[in-house]
Length: 134
Image 1 (spheres, rainbow, N blue to C red):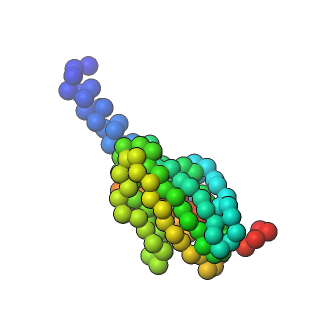
Image 2: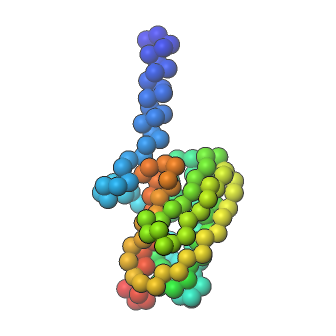
Image 3: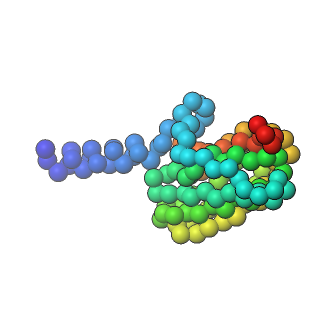
C-alpha cells in the first residue's frame, strides 16, 4: 500500500472515532459508570471527569430531589462543555484541558435529566433523580 491510501485510511479512522454516535436516537447511550451523589438532599455533591476519549466518566449520577453541586474536571487536553437537554438547567462554558468547573443545580422533581457535550455528539450522560429509598 502506498503512503497516500494509508494516510487516507488513518484520517477516516480518526473521523469515525470522533463522532461517537447519534445522541438524538435515545438508543445509543452507553454507560461509562455510575456515581451516587453524597450529602443531604439540600447539598448533594458528585464529580465527573471529561476525557480525550470523548466520555464523561462516570456518565450517570443518581441524586435525590434538591440541590446538587456537580464538579466537572477535564482530565485531558480536548475542550468540552456540559449542556442539559432541559434548558431551564444551567450549563457550562468551554472547559479546557486540565481545568475544573462547578455547576450548581436544583432538581425539584424526579426524572432523568440528559446532558451532552455539544462539541462531541455521542458524549452523553444523565442525572437520575429519585425519591429517597427508591
